[in-house]
Length: 219
Image (cartoon, rainbow, N blue to C red; front, side, top):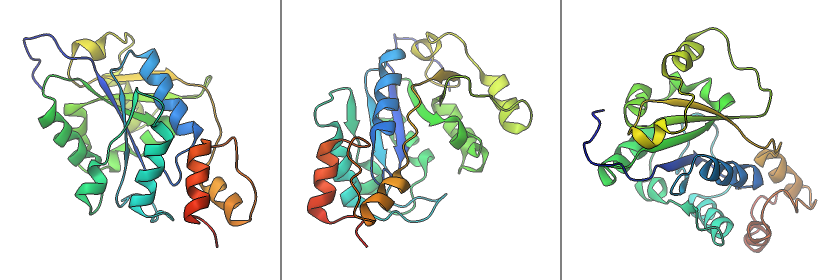
């Protein structure tokens, strides 16, 4: 992607997923990267239909509602409903291209956990994603990065060590950034709810209240 002549807008983060349900691990990742990298905000984007995993237990509307209530008191996190509105299989490349058309002067930063990035080259048109975004790889402190293979080569080719790069270029870089390790699992939360256990303190109270009102995840 060509660099534009005029000064760039502040970068925004893109955090996609099923969010079935959204929990503190997701939220802390978005907020921490937003603060540490000086992003304008982070778009939390629940998918309509995942293409790399089984169908979510909650409906698209329920998962979007949970994201909305989770971020309602945090102005730097934004519930983005574009994949829900678009329907069909949710491909990140479509979301990236849509945002790029809306924000031609804004660096886009795709926030991904290292484990998820190991399968990045199976994503549809992954090269196009790299042409239009930076990749921010969040990892636990002391995480050992892959030393060989296609993903390791891709990281070495694109790796940037200065966070200023994402403010000075529209796309193309890969940054590694440690985040607070919160080992919270959405599937474990769903299991606890199905068994009648209390998952409080793993997810926002507003989300838990919504789940209880909707009867979501009950067997």
